[in-house]
Amino acid sequence: MCFTIYSVDISNMIKLYLFSKKVHRFLVVIIAVIGLTMSLTGILLKYPFISEKLVYIDLITIRYIHNNLSPFFTIVFLLMMLTGIVMYIFPFTRNR
Image (cartoon, rainbow, N blue to C red; front, side):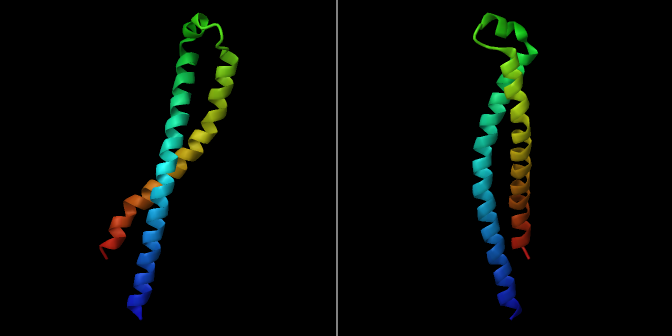
């Protein structure tokens, strides 16, 4: 009876690991897009002479985009960290 309880726990851990892996892969793509956008807007904010050469770039809009993306970046990064921790701990649970 103890073996069946143990095997159910392993089955649930495998399901959690596979779910975490899928979510983590999806979040990696999202964080790459958000991170690239934030890095480009951050460069434009740090070096305003670039925006002077490109007349269609407005610093207020760039600042608005950069400031509004940062909470999403933080949430996605925290979720990615949590799924990464689950994937890191999973091999240690299999060794029991």
